[in-house]
Image 1 (tube, rainbow, N blue to C red):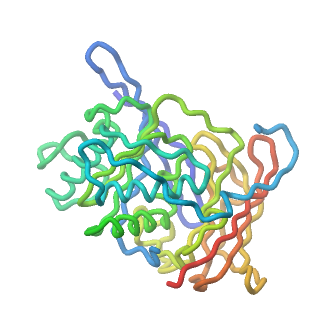
Image 2: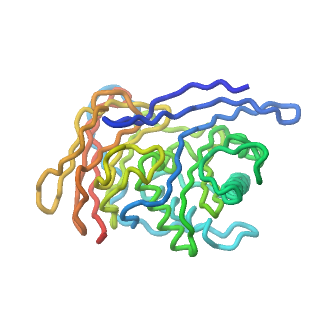
Image 3: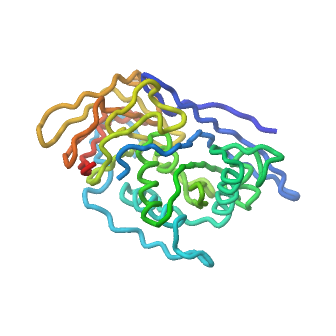
Length: 336
């Protein structure tokens, strides 16, 4: 028996993503395990462009992430698993999380098993998505929370991200992770503050992220992506490449820019701007109806494709946990 409630975590003037947080009780032999399922539909049919203190009043300025380009995360090979496509996808995610000051995810064998079984299901049935249907080849369970539990994951929060395309090499897998992070709906799952573990399956690349225990997240913490100091940032985004489509009817925008807090925190953004640092000119953004509304994530879409090899800076003024903050990030685009 599942009790479901819906929380609006991301909205703009064109579309609203609804995250469904479902509490599911699983009977595990003689004890019950509570499993909190983060049900954000995050499927990409790959056509991504340019993959390349608690408050109490007061004000502050937050620069998102370190300025220096981060070194690669040194992740040891997992027992019995050769370094390959799935691990390269995982490692790239951890490099980005580390650069943003987020928790580096531990490899979870149970989440990897759940991810691979769901990847097999998708391939065997020529389907792509998060659900499974009883009676079809490779069926494990309808929902990914149940599939993670069936694989032995005992955490209390699970998210899933799927990307199409056929990664032939480790570098392909890294590029595909960068493509996922271009898409804002996927980004909020992969860069979730609460997650502690992850596992990856392949063909198609399927990532399960999960949280063990109740990791503490500062209620006034806000992060930006692209992060401060990031290089080779994509120039553009095709909204139709993400499901659900965040901007129906719009073919191409500049790289989506976002700020997000913890999944269970919220803030109100009052002003946002993007500047071409090299020229000093303001860059036009698409209208955003979520200014002034309570959110735990906020996205800015540049109206036009961004210029190559150019420095940009974006800032968002917001109030979170009673504290006014300006979150800023300066980054450099890639060549294409």
